Length: 584
Image (cartoon, rainbow, N blue to C red; front, top):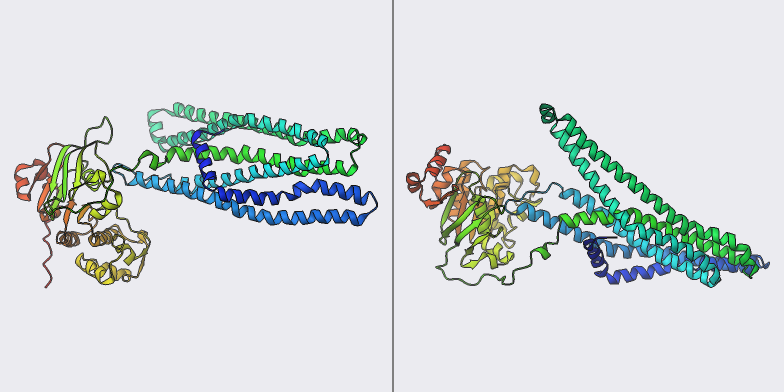
């Protein structure tokens, strides 16, 4: 019925919560008491009570049935509580996987935000949660309800149990035999709908080009082909529904017909009227509803569960399996003062096996406490270099050491203590301003925060927002305001290396100069991906990336020997901003 991934995930979810599942089965057993006792107690009420002229006895048996119904109703509420203890952790695990993979894809170098993540999280994961819960309920309902009814039939008369069980098993076998085909056709139906949506969207968004090229007939034929394919899958699903109806007719209604037809023969062999009535009750209120619920539940929600979970597992593979932790992972050790802040050796990185390398055989050494500006045209590899140094992206060749420690063998938590990378798109979360500033340094007191705000020129912004305790909403802040808050947060971080990847591009030149001056006088090393000539001039050393041979040197040196740098300086026509004068 299911592919290995779906079977594995389902079994893992069930096995991980065996205790809760056992509790669910226990309450299901209590819930099935009316199904177990109904036919037997009604048969006794009829035979020993009402037909025997003893109505009090008959009412007593019916009272016992009422008690069983009350117990079953109480257990029903408990089953849903136990069901949640199994289903909700499974849902949370899927949601975590979707979010983790979306964040990994969005934050890796060359990655991009996945606009379908919210859809998968709020729609597909919820479908899996609901259908998984439905499958558990219908499966345990069939097992306990049908089992209780069969036990009750055996208690009345084994012959009656055989008459009812035989057609039910035939109907169930027909359904189970058709189930793999149902899954395949449901999968084809979903994919046909996706292909139709993609085809229609492409035709609508490019309708002007279609008209300009005279391709109306071709595009219409393509969309019509997708429509026909989806219609064919819907007709196939309708035939599958007919098979479900056939299995229900054989397994649910044929036992009633068999019992009614065999009633004279059963009565001739000593079966009482109460037993016949009890047998009909077991079939009509036990076996038939249980089979109907199972077939409809698996044939509907079960198919959606398999197909939707397949899609989630396909687009969100288990990251721990694909990327096992490095066996030599370690935290940084004490280093000598001579160790450079960054030592990159012969780095090579490309975004595809056949693509041109963004960086090839590249080397760089940054002394402890040095201020480096990286410049170059768009696409030269500036952000790629920042990601390689920060350890966010592994190179195809070469090594990176931070303070003497190999980035490839250092744990993410240890890397976070060694460097801070501030991207162009600043991340600010909803909450207090102080909480955003303390994100990388939770132990910072208010005085430390005030010092940082003053050093980076962010005091007017903090005052305008309402102070450190003021709640902030990221969508209500401008891009420059978000960048300034992120810069203060990075300045407070204990990491000795800060990488600003165009992290001040939305600030005005004067405020940018204040921010970079604060970072330049902060203990540690600084790399600035520059977008203004003023940022380059303020640096102690510059690195020019132009797709060929990288060049390093001071501003004056590069003006004389780097044509790329001279061209960039010519494009940056704003005046150089000098660092602010030190405070008295």
